[in-house]
Amino acid sequence: MPDRPSIRHRLSRRIFGGASGGVFRGMATLALGSGIGRVIGIVAIPVLTRLYTPEDFGVLAVFTALVAILAPLVTLRYVLALPLPRQDGVAMNLLALSTGLMLGLSALVAFALWLGGEALLGLVSMQVLAPWWWLIALGVLGTATYEMLTLWATRRRAYKVIAQTNVTQSLAGAAVKIGLGLLSVQPLGLLLGQVVAQAGGIGRLLRGFGAEFRANWHHISPARLRKVAWKHRGFAIWRVPSQFLMVFSMQAPMFFMAALYDAQTTGQFGLAMMALSMPVALLGRTTSQAFFAEASVLGTRKPREIRSMLISVLLRLAVVSLIPALGLCLFSQRVFPLFFGTDWLLAGVFAQALSIYLFFQFIQTPVAHVFYLFNGQRQLLFLNVQRVILIAALFGAAGVFDWASERTVWLYAFVMSVHYALSVAYAYRFIPLPAKEA
Image 1 (cartoon, helix red, strand yellow):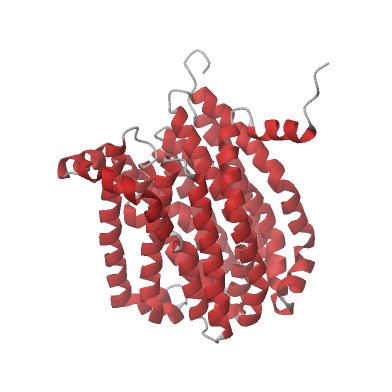
Image 2 (cartoon, one colour):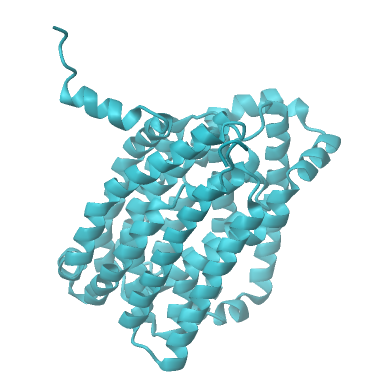
């Protein structure tokens, strides 16, 4: 009688086998490599909350939101097409096109901030960031460069290299924030550390793929650059506004909180978002990268397999995130003051509401890539327009009716949860099926 597989073997086969096996093997590599760095980043937060004030965290939250909105735009989203071409020559021209756009538009951002940064930042009550306009520009350039290089690594399915850079980012960013905090460099320490946390690892990626770039450099020509720009123009025409709206909808709550409430409340909200979004950013980003890489290999000719992969990934993400979300919803109001200090009670109240929203946000992380694969830029734009309208309406009502911050955050969490759930269903139905199955 043959031996039965061990529990460990059966569990491994269940998780890493089947349609989504490649996704979860890639995700496991990314999560394992970067998990240590993320744990250190999370452990560092209680130290940071004792070195910096809620007002400092409010400045950091708006700074992070600005960089997150601007960085994806400077490549006009051509960078997202890097994993798709079969031939390295085409991908190399996309890389060159993205690099040129990034350098030119980053310089334009720097000039605009230098010229009128105080007036622009005053729109979100954050004139305190005006002296650090150059740091915003540097953060935009560094974040865009890192995204571009990691997408090339995704093309190569070099998950280990990406994971190593995630470790570098987390460790270096935490070290800079703590070190400058001990020297009472506030809030600059938080801002510099954030730039390092977003752009660290660029050197490692350049060393890892520099030889490939040099070997394929001869493929670049003005004619080919024009050709790839035209062929992938949908990313610039549809993905740029869609990306702006998507990131703006994620970061807009910070701007609205800064406009409606005081700096301390904004800082409390910023800490809650940062603490809860760290694991979401880690596992969500790794899942998204791995799903895109594996689905790109399948290609649009195998929609049935992609459908199967997507539903499998979504179910497993739900299982992974359910218990942590419930724990945060039930206990964050008690845990936050113990973990971060008694000054951060309101952050625990916010985290209680946001745990529900982040559960649904975590599950839908692979969804956008479905639209990339099947030329659904218009549909993705529609979803992002819808999200921005919902957020603007909600915070507009909060201002008109003078809602308390706790009520505003709870309603925000509920509305976004419903939106993300419906977006997942829409993305699944968007994947085409052969005519005989439709």
